[in-house]
Length: 508
Image (tube, rainbow, N blue to C red):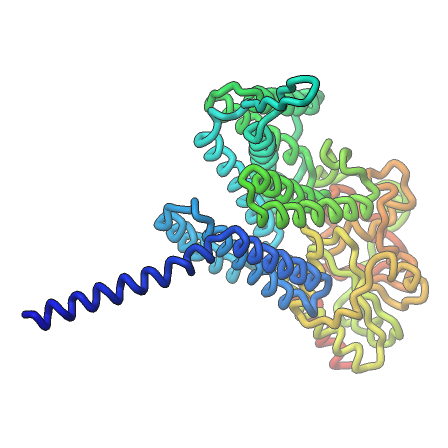
């Protein structure tokens, strides 16, 4: 018995010793200095990861580096002494992993814009919910002030709680707009909602301004110290309605710009939440997303020769087909050819430029296109790809598809780089790219896309267009290119049509 008692005492002594040794380690791990070092490491990895996204060859590695940086930031946040509810945190991580990984793995490349819109919306919704929870916890302290005594006067200035309230309210409004706007973007891209603009007519802009004013007024009242959870919910609802009404009037042709803009909104709202919660990770990561999204939005808008306010005002893209104008049906007819005819034109060309669009994405034809390019290159043909900034349904859509098919990155040429080469090109092969090749943007002042920079395929020696039908693109207008005497139409599914061309080349 005494031996058992002695061993028990020894075990208790060892446990006590271990706890004493672990205490300093716990204190060190939870110290602000160590946590800030982890945040600095996370920021560095995230910046390096973002740099890697500059090109397809380094994009995968960049994503992995950024993912490690995000993991470090999450660990640093969880080490905060005030963090608790570990059961809920673990449950949330498990649910998010169980939903996110299979969804990302199974999504088709054609549905990637919808996935981006959903993920972006989830970020904005999370920010809005965090702001709501923060208000439920600390809303009673909103509007407090601090007395500052100087040598001359006594001044009352906003206290810390006021600054927290400002950022929390801003995050709630912007996050709610981003969440609901992203949902509408998803619905349009998924064709759950019509791609055409849906407006309230003349009262559209007044209603938007009224909702914005209501959300701002509620936010100012909350910041000033009015404690009412119902008012906070009303602010979220007004912002939600505003998010819906901002995106509903935007047509499908503007959707790449909208996705970039909503992405910037989510980043800004996350940064505001970071200011409210004093979380460096949210501040830095949010500002990176907000800044990059804003720059991308401006570049995409410039590529369409449209201002961001005009895009938000809506009304462009996705409308019903309009009557042909300029050099269209009344000035010519459409010339249809077979895949064998297209193969002959391509086989005897010296320079070929392939212009991919959403039709290639829908048909999943990128691998067939790569096979066609390889066959032409074996015959000594110089093959390049012309990439319009807004081709597809999200920024970089065509680049992603072609990278998936292992197309060499140096063959991808941006619009401004390829246009000077088109007059010296024998054949342009347009695969599902409609609005971004429409000469009406240059020739027809009455066209809604007039002034938009396009890939000037009509300057090439001849043009072959692969398209399912004569239906217009997302801008809802007929393409004047199809009636050009040098243009030949090959009707059919892009993947099947390209495969037939490859088969035709083998017989030449």
